[in-house]
Image (cartoon, rainbow, N blue to C red; front, side, top):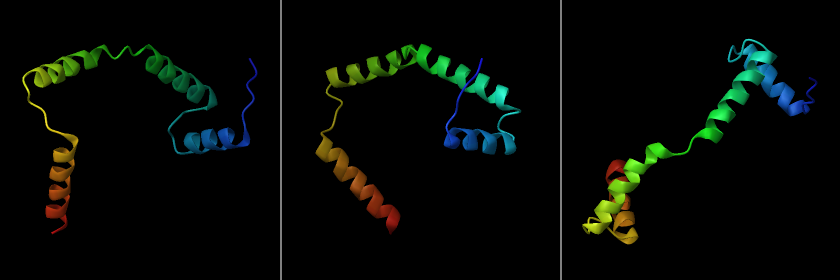
Amino acid sequence: MTISLTTEQQAWLEAHIADGDFGSLDDAVRRLIDARIVDESDDLAWASVHVAEALAAVEHGDVITRDVHRARNTARLASLKG
C-alpha cells in the first residue's frame, strides 16, 4: 500500500518518531489508526450513569441558574487572585 502525506504530516510524524513517541513510520500509522478505531467505536455508554444522576438532580430541584454559576465562579476566581 502506498500512502501520500503532506509535507506537514511527514514532518510531524518524523518529529514524533525522533522523540520516541513511535518506533517507526509503520508503528505510528498502526497506532494512530488503532486510536481512531477506538474513538469511533466509543458509544459513550460510560456517560449514561452521569446523565442519569444529572436528570435525577434536576427532578429533585438540585440545580442552579447559569447566572448563579457564573457569579460563584467569578467570586472563586477573585479569591484566588487575592
